[in-house]
Length: 81
Image (tube, rainbow, N blue to C red; front, side):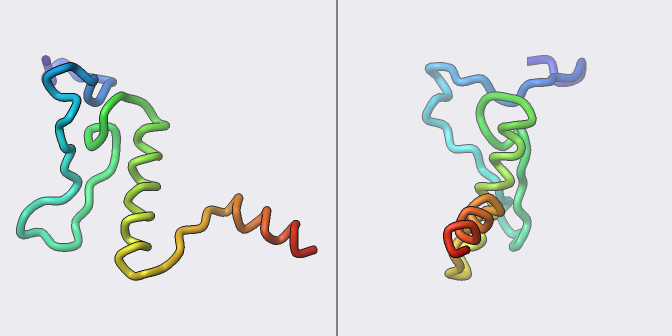
């Protein structure tokens, strides 16, 4: 992999790394979380956004809050009306 030339992709799944854990925190840096295409397999804006969504779900779980998307809020409002 030639990172010096720049890469558009994050990590491709291979037989060697398919069970690898992608860490999104760093030891001794409490409260720091990393998101983006380099913190999850595959590539692109969708994966980067998904990693952010997953972090918010994790944080909600840690403070015992239910994760609800804006679309879920709209759907619930329509059902209640």
